Image 1 (cartoon, rainbow, N blue to C red):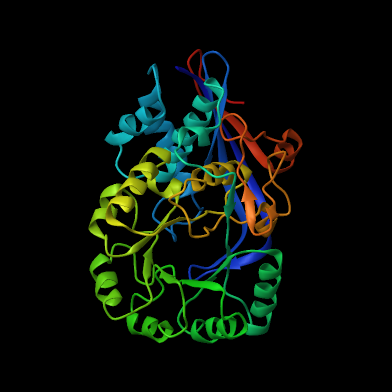
Image 2 (tube, one colour; image 1 turned 45 degrees about the horizontal axis):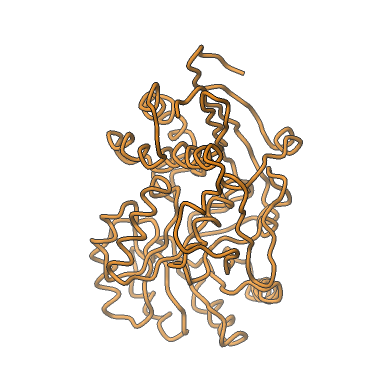
Length: 371
């Protein structure tokens, strides 16, 4: 395939409820959709999920846009792409900027699936028709409010609860959940909030958590390893895992995989291979994706290596609405895996009119133009 044009649609979806983490509060999710059109007219869709502020990782929505236009698209111009895995190699000259890379790389996977008249999940091995999922809960104002949310999600069928924590808002809410739901798969996500007082994490070791995610700051691999030796609760890395080589470095710890954070599907497949080599538990996290990114995640999570429920909640867990015609819905604690061509989704034009703030053609083989 050769790329004929690339368009960007900037969107915003309001959240049903503010989502509070140790970083701050999120009330809406800004994201871009990238429409990559091949010369014969087939269109692939990718999602840029970077946040507006550099608090989760250093990459932002605005910096990623610049990298896509000035560094990544020039690498695709006039290339004859036989398989989307080739895009990973083309992008190797650009350091970092994984979410920018993922937006285009995943769009080309969707495009390739449509061109070859198959679902992207058919390009993986041993997939399932549905995926068991969990739910992530932000820091709440009170334990009472938290418990009402947990009870509601358990009643809906979510098979795992992840609670965002920070110093001072950790032991009491987690203990309350554990006492009310002694058999529930329960984990905590610190988002690096304990970098100055790692000893506080030790107080969570008797709560029967399945894991604690990213307690220390990004790249503190030695600190995480030392902390793990003091605890029986497994520690899981999130922001630290960017490449397959990172898995080799931290092979003693479990990993949360987020496709946009590692640069796309090709690198994510490499990471799965390394996790299997090291016998590690790996599970798929989310980034408040719209239905586009959620469909891509569900297809990837349908692989048999994933047996721990990931952060791939139904669309209505976070949003009032979505930009695709068939948003993901929960059925007995599972989400159905889309099986149409490519990622198996169709954009809802009326919703794009409502939530899309601008549409811009950022590359054309015939001309450069703004729409």
